[in-house]
Amino acid sequence: MASYLSIIKLDITDIKKILNNWNKTCNLLEKVFRMKLNFNFKNKFIEIISPYNIKYNLYMSLKKYFKSLCYGFSVEESSLLIFYESFSIKTLLINSNNKKKLYFTKSLMLGNHGILKRSLENKTNTKIIINQKYIHIIGTNKNINILMLIL
Image 1 (cartoon, rainbow, N blue to C red):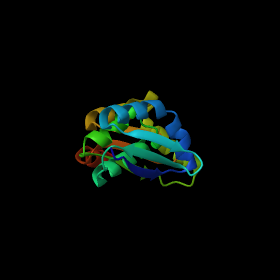
Image 2 (image 1 turned 135 degrees about the vertical axis):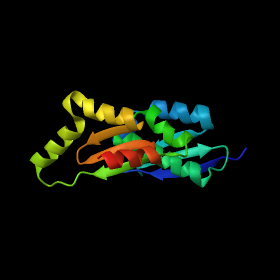
Image 3 (image 1 turned 90 degrees about the vertical axis):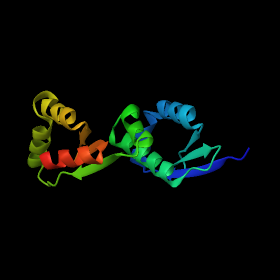
């Protein structure tokens, strides 16, 4: 039986973040898609070995899946990007060179004990992660647009 190889290139910082969820990711893709994953540390990429030829849509969904893992989303939340075409990921840059202003913006977005962030997630059916200078959002395009209007 023929096997097909696809490659997803990664940055060094992405590799460290994906390693935390590597076993869950391998189990998910092996059970659902009958794919084998190999991590090539030397050349910084993931090899996907599949018994069938991977279509472009699935390949792009897998790229988004690994990128969302790098942003800090869990395997369960990231897997929505593979299984539902209506789900996407959006990244916003917090424009601020001033550290105090950046801290104020992040604390304003989080709210007291994360209450504001959780309420935004619940109202818009999205998942939000805030790290460093970026806000990462997973959800349907409609829900992400609603959240963007609120922000």
